[in-house]
Image (tube, rainbow, N blue to C red; front, side, top):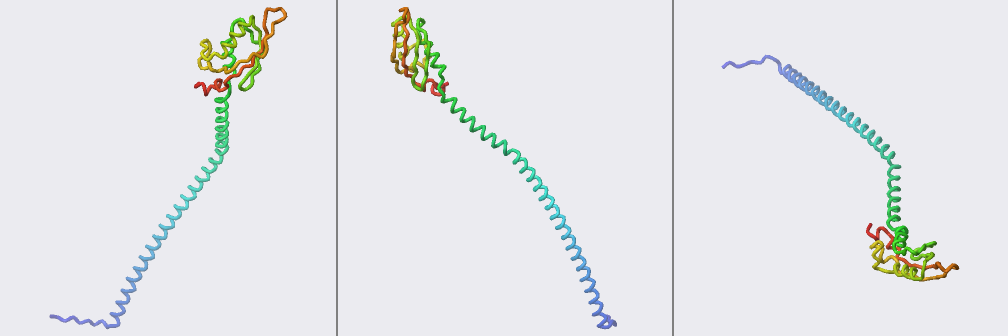
Length: 197
């Protein structure tokens, strides 16, 4: 076996090892710097993208706020309109329809009787008119309080609750009777909502 003889001095070997170590360390340091630089650039672009996205979102939010502020008046008007509608609906549903009262009076009035005046209050009214005879006036009064009167509106049969003769006078020519009646009525019967309409 041939023995290898190394003629390079020990110090030179040490220097070579140090040189290799410095080269490896330098290459690793450069690689580390490049990796750190790449990571830094990636983080920079990522944060730059996030900032742009944030700015875009803030711009969108501001636009939506402006749009919402623009619709604030619309919302206020809608609420006010809703309140007015509710109030009007309640008023219309609960109001008394005196046209029903007049049509029922006309339906129950005999042909020989004429109504000349009508003063309506809530729950009662005063009626004045002329009649050909006391019998016609009596028939009219009976028709008013008849709960089963068939010629009028069936839903208004219980409308008139009481009739009182205030006055009855024979005219000077003794052909007509002028009269005044006080009549009480159920105002709830004249309400469309209570009638199921």
